[in-house]
Amino acid sequence: MIAIIAWRNVWRNKGRSLVVIGAMIIGIWAMAFGGGFMQSFLTSYIESSIRHETSNGQVHHPKFTEDYDIQFSIEDYPSILTFLQQTESVESVTTRSLVNGMISSSRQATGVKIIGVNPKEEALVTELNTLISDGAYFEGISSNPVLIGNKLAEKLKVNVKSKVVLTFQDIDGNITAGRFRVAGILKASSLAISESSAYVLKSDMNRLLNIGDNVHEIAFTTISGTDDEALANTLQAKFPNDKVESWKEISPALVFMEQWMAATLKILIIIIMSALAFGIINTMLMAVLERIRELGMLMALGMKRVKVFLMIMLETIYLATVGGPVGLLIGYATIAYLGKTGIDLTDYSKGLEAIGYDSILYPMLQPMDYMQIVIGVITTAFLASIYPAWKAIKLKPIDALHTI
Amino acid sequence: MSTIIKAINVSKVYHKTTIPVHAVNQLSLSIEEGEFTAIVGPSGCGKTTLLNILGGLDQPTEGRVEVDGTDISIMKDSELIDFRLRNIGFVFQAYNLIPVLTALENVEFIMLLQKRGKKERHDRAMELLERMDIADKANSKPSQLSGGQQQRVAVARALASKPRFILADEPTANLDSSSTNNLLDLMAKMNEEQKATFIFSTHDQRVMDKARRIVTLEDGTIVSDVKR
Ligand SMILES: Nc1ncnc2c1ncn2[C@@H]1O[C@H](COP(=O)(O)OP(=O)(O)OP(=O)(O)O)[C@@H](O)[C@H]1O
Ligand SMILES: [Mg+2]
Image (cartoon, rainbow over all chains, first blue to last red):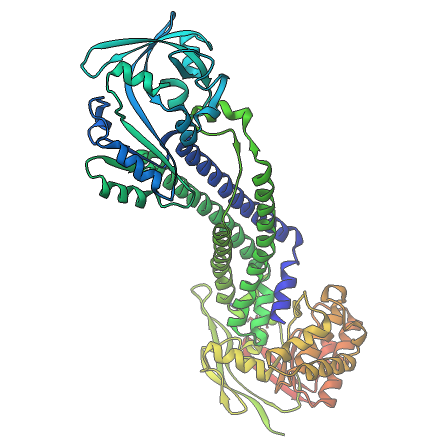
């Protein structure tokens, strides 16, 4: 009967209870949605960074990464290549030669990272071909084609088929220049690609650099679910003269971002939970204070304090258990729906793309995350119920009865 | 008839300001089984304080109260709660009933706290509501009942726990004269039929007239004790 009394007490002041329940629903929804949104932000960012930039792992000469000195090409790269091609968890591999140089049009000149690629393998590894927004992927130009990012093209005021000159030092320290023609324009959210890279054929590049067959970089992708760090370690042990890194080492920023997002989500949850807790405590304290005489009467009649405590706690928990599942359900529905259709952020995508995000996000939340929210809400409700219940049993029946 | 309550040299002193208030002063009183006793006296004479002490809701500053030979003035809080549940029925001036429960549930509730069986609870509650002439309102919430009807339910509840005695502090204070008469008549009936012991306080001359013993207080002491 205490359960019944508690349940009916919840509905004594319908308006007030509904406000708290409503707040819970919104709070839980916000947590679920916020969590899902951030998760998708993160995943989309990391996946797109791996896909288009870092790949799952890279190999360099240990000294090359320091200052892009083209002398330091990968030692014994064919055997690494063969090994990677034979590794089951490796999806695709490509090799590149790299140099920092200048790109100039008839109007402008600017610093650029020049990347010599094998078009076919590069397409498999970084899907570079999918980024073409104008022109074609190393096609339509008879000799010395180059792909540049859209921002770079704007800066240089060039179009497809325009002439550009790439200038850099060859292996002997001589300044070399090559005439190239823009085969295609790349549109990417990554600034590195859209603003400061020029892709040429590796064969053209190596000829100008005078480095023969050598490469500076091997990049590989892995099938999903691969432990990229473990693979990198295995590879490193096998080829100690070169430096093997997984995406986490190549781009510590991604790892930091992962942690930062997790921390932000925690803070968000703590804020929402505390707001909920205070809402619940406030409501229940009001409910207790309003009923001082009644509670006094119950204790005067002989209702044990434990039972009074339990009753007030139950009332609080009922409030939470009505709001909790509803909020969770709405949150789940929102995420399930938006997870399919995606959230189109095109209107804001200028800013987002500028910092490297895709403009359509697919929110998602793991079952574990839902569990965490459920546990969080129950714990919050439970903790929030203690103080009002404590207040209630601290009443002395005689004083409570005489309160006006 | 055996003695149920024995108050021996009971005093209660409040120190609200610097001047001590002797709400009850060196008072001794015995209540026998089956009594129908009114505690009367001017406002502030100590009626409520005395009833609270007899009911184990308040501790005397001095003296002791024995119920069936057990000293309740030395009991711990938690023991007192249990003691009240098993031995004392209460009817308060107002706010007697749990607003979210029906009349029937309110009467059953006290027996539930006593851990009585479902059928016994229901049957006894219905029977008492019938005796108190309020069975037709068994399924009404307190807010749907008049003040007199609420007090009748409260008396039914007080009886339901089969207490040794029932304390009622000004049970008719909020009632009009016909409801007052009606309630007192029903209480008197229960006193006879169920051999229930009633101790109630009042200001009301008509209520005093129904009592079979009138204890008059003044400044916390008994100035007259008349049995009729
Ligand atoms: N909690 C308290 N603190 C201080 N003084 C109190 C307290 N309760 C009662 N008193 C004082 O004790 C005296 C007796 O009060 P009590 O309430 O017992 O009188 P009463 O006979 O019930 O009066 P009434 O007929 O107005 O209900 C009064 O002088 C009152 O002011
Ligand atoms: Mg009084």
